[in-house]
Structure formats: C-alpha cells, structure tokens
Amino acid sequence: MSALRHLPIIVILIPLTAAYIMPLVGYKWKRLCNSFAVIALLLSFLGSIALARLVLINGPIHYYMAGFRPPWGIELVADYLGAYMCAVISFITLLVALYSREYITKEVPEPRRPQYYTLFLLLTGSMMGASVTGDLFNLFVFFEILSISSYALMSISGEGKALLAGYKYLLIGAIASSFVLLGIGHLYISAGTLNMADMFVRLPPLYSSWTVLAALALLIVGFSIKTALFPLHVWLPDAYTNAPCSVPVLSTLVIKVGAVAIIRLLFNIFRPSFVIETIPMTAALSYMAAIAIIVASLFAISQRDIKRMLAYSSVCHVAYVILGIGIGTELGLTGGMLHIINHAITKGCLFLCTGAIIYKTGVRNIREFGGLGRKMPATMGAFTLAALSMVGIPPTNGFISKFYIALAAMTAGRPVLAIVILLSSLLNAIYFIRVINITYFGIPEEEIEIDEAPLTMLYPMLILAACCLIFGFGAEILLTILKPAAQALLGV
Amino acid sequence: MIPAEFEFLLRHYNYWTSVILVVIGLYTMIVKKNLIKKFMGLNIVDTATFLFYISMGDVEWGVAPIVVHGEHAAEHAVYINPLPSVLILTAIVVALSTTALALTLAIKIYEKYGTLNSERILELM
Image 1 (cartoon, rainbow over the protein chains, first blue to last red):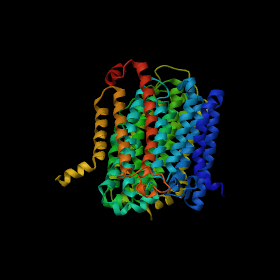
Image 2 (image 1 turned 90 degrees about the horizontal axis):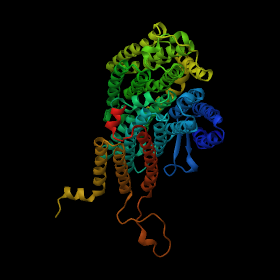
Image 3 (image 1 turned 180 degrees about the vertical axis):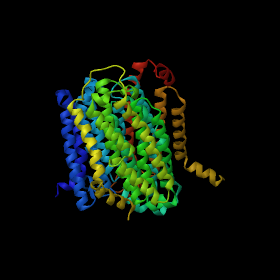
C-alpha cells in the first residue's frame, strides 16, 4: 500500500527517466531505441491503469514532493481527471511508439532516431505531469517541457517546410508561455500562494480586484493558444502538415492537455460560480468554440492535402471539448472530457492510417487515393471506421460524446450550441465521406503495386479502430471515472 | 507637490517599465521580417516578465533572506520575498532552452534557404 502511494510520481518519472537514458541507448545500441521506449511506456501505462483504479476506489491521491506539505512544497493531485488523463496519454503514446518502429525508418533520418524517442518520452512524461500537478508554477514548467519537445518533434524531419512550421509554432507558443507566466505572477501577487487548492480558498475575497481578472484573462489566452482554440490556431495546420504522421497524434494529446489546464484554471483555481455567473467566462468560451467548430469544418472541406484536412478537423474537435467545458454543467463537462479520449482515439487512428498510406504510396492528395480501399483493406477499414466515428454515427464513440455535449446544450437552455454540433456533424460528413468515397469507388490513375502496411503499423491502427467501437458500446467504462470527475470539479 | 496620479505612476515605475517592454517586444515580433529579430522581440518579452516577477518580490530596503545571528540580527529585520526570484530562475532556464532551440532551427533554416527574411523564404517555398 505504501508503494502505491507513490504512484502519481512514478507514472511521470518512468518516461522522464527513460528520456534521459535514451541518448545513451541510442549511442550504444541504435536498434534498441524503439524497444526501450515501448517498454518504458508500457510500464507507465500499467502504472496509470493502477493509478486510475486506485483513485476510483480510494478517491483522489495527494502526493507531496519530497515530503514537504503545501504551501511550501510541490503537490501532485491525482484526482479523477488527472488519473483519467494519465491513462489516456499513456495508452495512446504506447500505441504510437509501437507504430513508430517501422514508420520512422522512412520519415526520420537515421542519426536523429534516438532524438526522436528522447523527445517522444519527454513529451509523454510532461503531459502526464501537467495533468496531475496541483501547483500552478509546476504546471507552467511541465507545459514548457511539453511545448519545447513538441516544437522540436514538429521539425524532426529536417525538411525546410517542417523547420519553418516548427519555428512558427515556437514563436507563437513562446508568446503563450509568456502570457501564462505573467498570469501566474498576477495570481501569486494577489493570493500569495502557488498551490491550486490554496488559491481556491484564498481568491474569493479578491474576485473584484483587477489584478485577479487580468490574471484570468492572461491565463485563458495563454492556454487557448496552446489548445489551438480557433482564432489562435494558426500554428497548428502548418505544423501538422509537415511533421511525420506519428507527431500529430501526440500533438492531439498536447492540445487536450491545454484543455485540461483550462478546466483546472476555471474550476480548480477559480470557483465555478465565479466563472459561470459573475463573469460569464465559460459562456464566452463556449460561443468562441461554436464559431471555431463551424469555421474549422469549412476550412477542412476546402483542403486537398489529407494531413491538412485532418489538422483542421483537430482544430474543430478540440473546440468540442472547450464547448463541453463552456456549457458549465455536469453533463457538459462529462461530455467535454469524454470527447478528450474519443477524439484522441479516432484522430489517432486517422493519422496513423494516413501515415501508413503515405509510407506505402507517398500520396497525400485526396484525389489520388483511388483504389486504395482494395489494395490496403485493413488500413482503409480502420480509416473508415474512425472517420464514421468523427462524423458521429452511432454506435461509434464519436456519437456518444457529441450526443452528451448536445444534450448538455439543450438542458442548459442553449439550443444554438446543439444546432452548431448538428451542423458541424454534417460538415464533418462532407469531408470524411468524400475521402471514403474516393478510396473505395475512385478509379486509380495508374496501377501501382502496393500491399498492406507492416504489422507493427497495422496493429496500433486496428487496436484504435476497435477502441472506437468498444468505447461506443461501453461508454459506461469511462463514465465511471468521468461522472465523479465532473462532480468534483463543479463541487456538487 | 506632485499630483496623486502622477505619484502612483512614479512609485510603480518598475511595473510600468515591464509593461512597456512587453509591448516593445510584441511589436518587434510583429513588425520585423528577420526570423532572429522576431526571436529577439520574444526575448524582450521574457525579460519584461522577469522584471515583473523580481519587482513583486522586492520589499523596500529589504535584504536577501539569510538569517543573521549575533549582534547585527536586529538590523536585518526586513527581508525580500525569495520565492519570485527562485521562480524566475526556473523561467530563465526555460527561456534559455527555448532560445537554444529557436537558434538551432534558425541555423537549419538558413542552411536550407540561404536567408532568414521571412518574406523571401515564403517566395522561395
């Protein structure tokens, strides 16, 4: 039992420690890099599952780093949301690491492969850290590790366009970091503490102060850039288009961690009553997200490059998460958090399938996809299933979370938001059905001899595709942890 | 006799400096075409943030918070708040690593395109 108490830190430290050993492994035994990363992530995944189980049985775990109690020490809080995020992150990254084995032999030059895995593990560890930390400054530090490793991963291929996209992402992301840092400073100056639970207690008398309001504004803008919420999403399409296909899958998680930071800010640092009623921050976010959903869907329709289309679709779907949070009811929060895993699974599957197609054929333009359905049946099968889930066709998991968010919008008395979700599902259908149509019924311009993707690439895709159905039929598994998470956040 | 509003400005001149520096930095990032200069703008924003943090930890006539024993103990009763300085040490490390990565990318971009002017690079793409 006493060893289990240390689970929150163990789960984070496994990938982080592995990241520091990775250059050594890469220096000595280049071939073992992938196995090492997979083993580290597998251990971390098992730890996360154990953590989630423990949290479900015993309630949130408070872990004090080095035994210093807050407000002096850094506190890790593995609450329902944190444990859930850890499980999601380690699950998806494990599959991506497995997938990377064959995939990066074509996308990443040989000498950079150990660096790829180092950054990969750093990113994983810091994402989990950012999800479970209970200290605001610690959140910033984890966010910076996360951001810097993802800037580098985005430009890992070393091509001109990828470098430029990485540089653009870095400039925009660094502005976001400065805003977050300034916001934290404002909160510290007012509350005199950096611990989130402490701030939650100390802030209410200061709610009328301009300093606190400025802090809220700075932090929301900073995290919105990291989350790629619509007008601040400009870094995302370029970065996704030029990175190897395994990186956007990780980045799908990165933007979700941004959404988790927004949840923490709104409900764990400020009080729900303040951000919902006193200043309608959640309402502002939900309408922003509604605009984002429509505009990003329209952008996605006009793309010819499949990766760019999926990138805009990511902008659209992260806005769903924000929309769910913005509705601000228990149902809305549950739906938003449910969409975190559902979108990670479906978009992960789509990007991995796209990676397999590019790996085999080198084709990225959707119009040249003709005949792929017959040549790569398993890959395109997984792609189709995930695409249907994106559109939100029952019984896939995409339907469940969209249904939850729409239902929340109706019960909260904002039918406009439900209409937006319905409309966006139709727009989603337009661009995904187009791809499915071409792959199965399109006529190839020239006959090329290709076969199915290698097994290490195929299994992760098929597992994710299966998850689309499993979590569609068995959404109850997730709701057991998400219901208490939403209740804890809203304090009911 | 100085008017009250003006005195308010004067008394908090370090905060105003940091605000002005943030604005200068953001302006540089928007206006300059050179990728390195854009990043220098970002460094100015970072520095302004550091100044902001250090200002808020400062206490007038305060000294570094090191406990002094003996006869001089009473003289050093006022200490500055050490926490913001510690936080900013971390933030400096973060800014440094971002700078290192940005310069690495800039070198690679220069190798590929032979220029760092963002508009000329767009023409070359």
